[in-house]
Image 1 (spheres, protein in one colour):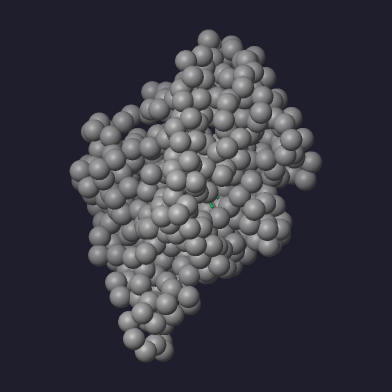
Image 2 (cartoon, protein in one colour):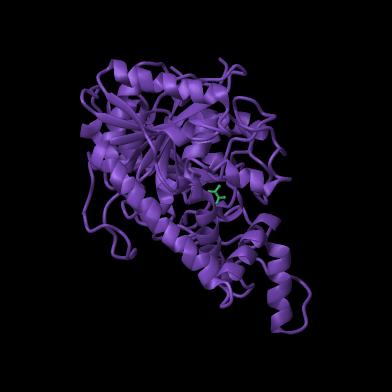
Length: 485
Ligand code: GLN
């Protein structure tokens, strides 16, 4: 048995049955990382010694009957913008230097309490700004399906690690698609939960009104289990919902009879790669065969989602990132005269180009002369987009479309053309603007053999609808791994 090929729930079951030891599971995963990660560069920081120590402690706890979670003993990779006590957390930026948080993010507390083991911190676009994982200070992550291609972003390290079997499960974050799009590019499954479902306490902020943490796994069940574990109210995040806990596992039913699925016509027009479009529509037909009711409709105002998103996300980023000044965290420039110069040189040297571009756009749209013309207008567009989804969800339970307009791009292809990269977020950003849940799961491959992602969007707290549809669809095809035997 190859432990690294098991899904997280399968592995959890074997651990509970005593067929696999926790140390054995963690060691197998560390060995796979050490063998493969030089090709893929998924991990920024490996938590080797501590993970093994923890494995023994969890084993002891399990032997004493302490952990009830189906994921107890299962190792997990964490995106490097989620704070982990005692483990360096970089946001893939030079400016955080060797910042080692003195506390755990809420999600880490929860998965630790359940007996999961953190393998290490995985690569991402700097401060989660990007769609390719190429803006990382630690170098790009490569797509396990084809190392000349990007894994998507910004949670590219997380999605690639899961695909490359360097972790059974990972946590990513999604501000405008960063869980779903890399999941699509790497042929794995990822969920962006309804805003407020998962505490953001300890998630290093990019755009606070859009950010959500969510799971990336090799199947829908693993994602549902992980999401059940990490969601629920948290006093330290004022936007977290006042519901103690969630259980998504009962949504995993192979039954879509009568499920009303809306397909936005506009999602299948100009700009969409034809093979991606055909593959996604074929997936919709599969669901129809199983009894789902499909219809096409016009999702109004989504054409304005990208400009509204980039105005709002950049505005929030410019405010959130003002705290990196060379005083409180990590990196400080070596030579400076006075305090102003210290700030300036630290930020000039510490941030990469994409992050600087966002902060400048953000400062501009928030400036007194342009606030109404840009920021305020973007907020109005956001409200209109939300209403447009609300109307759609009066008629449909799930909205179906592609996750991204193409399969994985070549490394370097979009770095030189940021606007092109932004346009690639066309199907994902509106979901964050409206605070909705959405899942991306593999639905086939293009002629080059690259995975295509199917996106299912739900109404607020409609996770169970999209999980049910995703689970049903998943039954129609076997998981395909890029890792050769
Ligand atoms: N690609 C989008 C951006 O660059 C989304 C990133 C994300 O979801 N963190 O902002």
